[in-house]
Image (cartoon, rainbow, N blue to C red; front, side, top):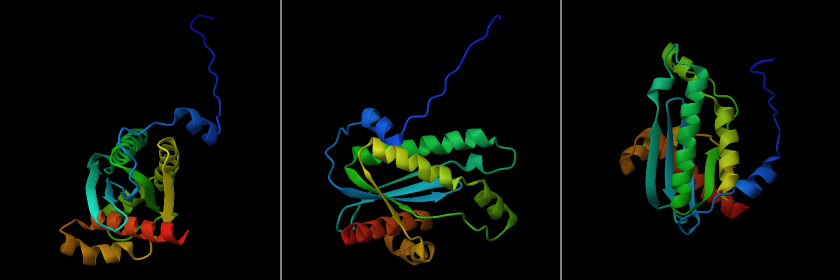
Length: 183
């Protein structure tokens, strides 16, 4: 039995994992809100304060993951790294509340290309990774209703000088403030 080896896989409860793997922020946690808009080829994040004033904007683009023939596991890795960088950036800029859309499965609309891009989007993986990362940085995850966020973003984008996806992230962050106040 040359070159034989044994591997052991252990499942660790998330609460136990985050208890020991929690990262301390270098910056003071101010209590800002970060809204995230997930798309097949980008993730947009807007950091706002409690009054709704935009403090920072950060987007990660990865258009290479949507064409035919791109390896699925490589695309997953690229998306996960982008989320991790955005969450770390938000933590280092005083974010306590991370706001995402409470989505199930997106319905593909439009052209064949847009339907393919949407079908390649791993929404459940985005949400699961956000839950793990946010618990590691001692933040709170807020899930909001996504109804009409894209329509509102189209109206608001021109006024703020943002693209539609970044404006959508802003609207999601505003909904997070509203939901947090209600809780």
